[in-house]
Amino acid sequence: IDNLKKAESYATKDDELMVIYTFLGINYEKKGDLDNALFYHSKSLDLAKKLGNRKMEASVLNNIGVIFHKKGELDKALEYFKESLKLKTDEKDKATTYNNIALVYFDKGDYKSAIEYLKKAIEIGERYGEYHAIGMRMLNLGDTYRVVKDFKNAYYYLSEGLKRVQKVGDKYWEGVGFRNLGWYFRDKGDIKSAREYLNSAYEIFKSIGAERDASDVLKDLSELDKIEKNKK
Image 1 (spheres, rainbow, N blue to C red):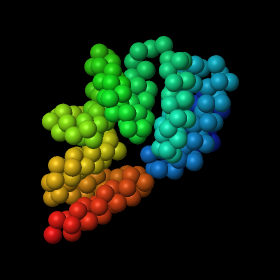
Image 2 (cartoon, rainbow, N blue to C red):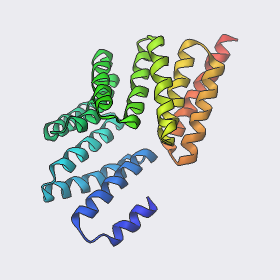
Image 3 (cartoon, rainbow, N blue to C red):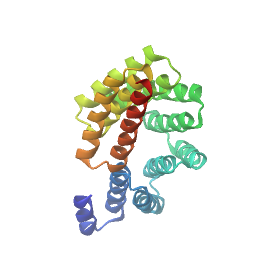
Image 4 (cartoon, rainbow, N blue to C red):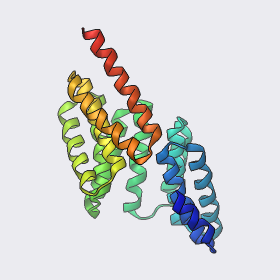
């Protein structure tokens, strides 16, 4: 964020600023600062429209959908994702939005639709060799299978997804993978393994400054303490 703000001060063209604002929005989102994330994505969207850059406009609409999703405004998130899809002509680009639509359906409790959209996103990724993106989507699909108690598919996709994001060095998604596996083992009743994975997730989130995610994992660890006390 510090370096992106330096870049902003040097930028002289709208297309440069548009990209910088997008990356600022993405990084603020990962830090859990959703208001600043929305602020910078909105600035990027204004410039994309001004420049007539439909590809970038579609991308930023998708990013804004992610922010509203994290804010818990699910219908608004779906609205932005569907607007993004309308502007996308490249199948490869649509996969990201399919993934995000799936996550909204997940939060709405429509797990069948979530699995359908995630599989669609993974299939597109496989056609284009998007190793990293497939890893992230596998983690999402594995977690959806966890919720519907299809533990065999859950473990397969969580394990495979984690391997992929680790291989490309994506620390944030490695944290997500450890967290999701922590939930998996918690649901299976293996509290010891759940604690190990959640502790690993906490350490990663804390080390990269993903404060919101780190705080959420602490709550998960606290829940494990309650489960252990109840067992005793």
